[in-house]
Amino acid sequence: MRGIEYKRLERIEGPVVITKRSRGVGFGEMVAVYGRDQKRRLGRVVDLAEDWAAIQVFGSSTGLSADDSRLEFLDRPMELRVGPGLLGRVFDGLGRPIDGYGEIFSSDRRDINGLPINPYARVYPRDFIQTGISAIDGMNTLIRGQKLPIFSGNGLPHNRLAAQIVRQSKIRSADESFVVVFAAMGVKYDVARFFLEDFERTGVLANVVVFMSLADAPSIERLITPRCALTAAEYLAYERNMHVLVVMTDMTNYCEALREVSSIRGEVPSRKGYPGYLYSDLASLYERAGKIQGSSGSITQIPILTMPNDDISHPIPDLSGYITEGQIVLDRELTQRGVYPPVAGLPSLSRLMKDGIGPGMTREDHKDVSSQLFAAYSRVKSVRNLASIIGEEELSALDKRYLAFGERFEQDFLSQGEYEDRSIETTLDLGWKLLSLLPREELLRIKQDLLQKYLDPILAASAQVQEDIDEDPESERMRSVGHGGR
Image (cartoon, rainbow, N blue to C red; front, side):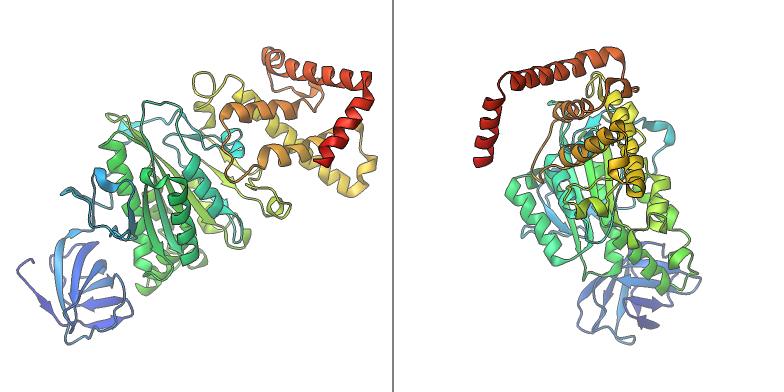
């Protein structure tokens, strides 16, 4: 204690308690609140004035009374205990173990709000993180130190995609450590159980730190959870020199909690009721990603958010897009057509992709193949719109080839199994096979030497197969019948 015990509360408003004693108290300071039952409840100072302080209690305020309660200001911000024992552990949204084991063995505690990073000390993000998902690795490559959010919607498979990213993500250098910090905010019990069972069953939990804040937890806990996760990530990256991927879901639940706390504090609302400082608050989380001089580690972020009513102009995705370096957008139409993962080809973008691909990082043809696939799929969208007006039978022969390319692109390239882990070489080879469906003169974004090296062997092999079929059509018919019978 600080030597002074404050008795009696001014009033209790749900999870927020008000006291008149606030001299020497700091914003964000931790507070212990004791009721008539002498039970210790932790809280945090969320608002201050000259002669009063507002404290949000973690958990229920049931049992507290204004006359019989007392306060203990702890004279410190909220801190997280960090150490090598973090890996493989499951914590609640406040950093308390919930996996049946005790606290980690460490006396090192860190302020969850982090420390400001001198912009001059930041190192430009480079190098490739392989997720094993073609739609990401091939078209929207994730770079170490990048912030690349996933924009989803209610009912879309973002939870399955998040679990797959956690399972499969890796760096190609065998001599560097790679770990994942996973933070879930406001998730339901069945979703939390899905993540934990998946991590345990696939054996990746030993390389993951999990922070889980359930839907019935207090709103303030959802605001603490990502900060605890990023504090753990900063320790692992900058003290243990590991490459850390932080997956945070669902940032919409975080923003809803921020709006709720802002309303309790009586602040003037801004767009759609969110506080005016939503941008700076999100930036305080997203900007904790990156690489800094003096450490070989890095922090890469994949925040996942569900867009209300699939509205990408909603304040949450809108502001996130300003702060981050691109976005991966999940498409409802692709989901309805059975494509998983339903990554929209055109709205998705990775702004740092160009700096982390190419010779020595992925492959020499990566940039050209990605650019050509994007251009071709864009043409597919235009042709589909035209076909919806004049009918597919009225299209030119070239447009019909683009339609065929679009179907194969969605079914073979974008779509893959939930437990299918594709290397970047497999992804690029698949891209070349799809591009071979188009006339060579349409591949204007690819250098001639790359066409000769990668496309010509595919075309030659296809020509040889067709020649064999022409010479022995009966054998080919029997093979087709036999394949169908199997």
